[in-house]
Length: 334
Ligand SMILES: [Fe+2]
Ligand SMILES: [Fe+2]
Picture 1: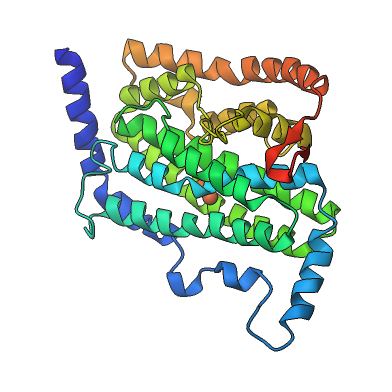
Picture 2: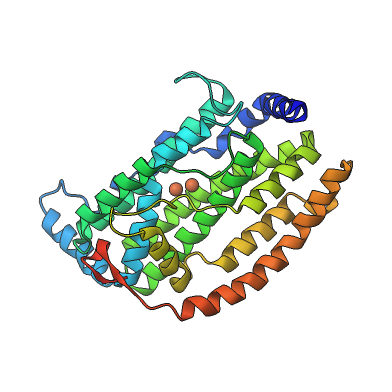
């Protein structure tokens, strides 16, 4: 118990010590005046010829397949559950707990990140609404369920584990939005392609910041950081939309399957994300570790190969799964 308390105190102290470093990384948030807004990426309804603009937009979106639309809905709903993610960040020891308008670097980062992320769900939702191809009520009900059901990435309030989780997730979403952009391109919808690419760019900036934050933790408390990384891997990094449902169906399982099938985000991608992080954080080369730290280092370095082998088995299983009716598409096949 005492060891746990000491370790928690040390972690909070490290997070506090990182404030100057975090302030130096705030440039990884884009100044608001330079940020894209959903209005920049969608047809304008103000001019006299709005009907033409809308028709042109719908002609392009009309070519997007139902399967891609279903994946896009799932991605959008996941983005829309942002209140859950911000609440979770604010529970992490040292990272959260500041005043509502505090200018502590962690608070500035968290609010700035949230404000940028808020545009992702917004732009995708308006796109889907204007396309006229999805059951928006069903989509909105699912969003409400997801926020009400909550989000538990199993990090408790541990800030180290929180930074591992965000590093994995931001890279995962960057991959997912980039692959969706590629699919939009093959469906000849340039507006959707551009939207997904812009979102992916934001995610990549966020990924960069979270990876640097955790790299700093590794520098200040290498053994503690390695143990947190290993713990997160043992618990598995759950996807943020895990409690997605519409009161009748578990829609998360369907969403995962669609993303795997379309290769938007796969088990193989997850393995590669972990491989990338181990490389970026130079895990195999860390020195001055406690015996526990060395054990975590060894276990972590063995993970990517194990995950890649698992990915092969998963791909074979997914190929056998049938497509099922999707409530977001008026029960057309998702
Ligand atoms: Fe996002
Ligand atoms: Fe993100």
